[in-house]
Image (cartoon, rainbow, N blue to C red):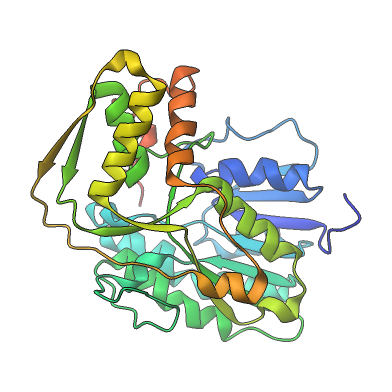
Length: 339
């Protein structure tokens, strides 16, 4: 372990997912001993299983005794696990509630009782729902449109209820993550549009006027690195938006078109087809606070995310991208009969 790390052992719930697939190798490179606690719907072959500092625990967050046993001896928890993204309503709504909300406070209590010193909770910027405000800051009312938004927001005060001098709690509300990760999701705006541009030569945009805040997966990982490294007094009890650029979906489509045409000229012109949508979610997130309070600034752009994805497609790292259900969270959970 590098001498600069204040913590030795970190447990990451949902660490076998999209963000975890890049975060886990990074934390190992940083010198942490890492435990992944995950139900493994998407497998774990993309994680560096041969690293002696990595422990994999296949477990369900709703099984609090199993989680409590797994978290013993850890210094910090990064809580990523959830039934993620808004289409989760396609699944049994009770599943979303049981995983995203019901088991949350028992998990926090178990972590605190196990001697964990720091708990980092990944909420979501979509807790804001629809807002016409040009700058949605952390004190903006939460107006959830879906169960996912609602339960993610309801967990935030439950975490802070348990903070104490020896249990530092911090919440982040990330924007929509984009870019290449070893366990890739192709059900997120930038990633969807890039997949279709590369493999269909055509992008279909539903609506287009909606604003979406975006965050490169590499910046998401950098934020977690910083939240582990900072002194407690810098982050205790804080809630931070984490995002980079707020773009209309039609602007994202234009960026994808431009980058794919530059990187893969053999595809010719990428067509953009606009079609009506009943998805009204639109919000512009302001992330000044995390910069002012702890100095975090994203450095990777949506263009970078598209370019990274195109490189991965060229390298054959994203096979069967239009048909493999593993790239789509909801589809995979339906197939696995998640309950």
